[in-house]
Image (cartoon, rainbow, N blue to C red; front, top):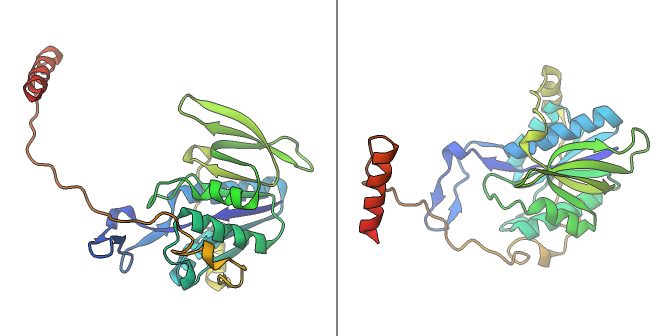
Length: 262
């Protein structure tokens, strides 16, 4: 089974700063990590390989320093890592990003399943995984909390339990497909010593926009119908008060405050 896992290197949320002039995140000098939700996708890819044999390939789009995230994935046990890196990708929104990743996956060749984390913590759109499936013309299931094969041999479909607001749906999806996962699906493993040694020596394959035969009108700013106009931190709230007493007292005081505002 050929398994592709899409990951993203994101700023650690404990150290996020915004450039007030460009309205973009300041990434220089900020600690970066693998998007936490993508760790569950990596783990699920490794578990599928352990169950059905095959190969796990991770792919990401980003600047050269994104190699750090790919090496971490290799330390966890993936077989191969691909970096899409080119100045032409700069400014890509979710549509342009999903297109570039889809073209990179096409260049990889045959695949059975693409796994993604449900969303990236720096954007929270949950659009890239489904976007990849649209560009590749394959079925997709989002917010998966459990993946099982419909048969143990010659797997042609997965039975997927998908998280919903009301509970869960159980769906059958044919291969090849794209599945985005939630953290309920597994518990990510820690890198092994052997894996860490291997990651240091691993060769990271890097592809440019030309290498993946990307249409330049579909990547970067030219391929992005949405653009960030402004990013800002909300102002610090001042004042406020704490209401004391039992439930009856607090409810009466709260009612009085709300009544005064109306």
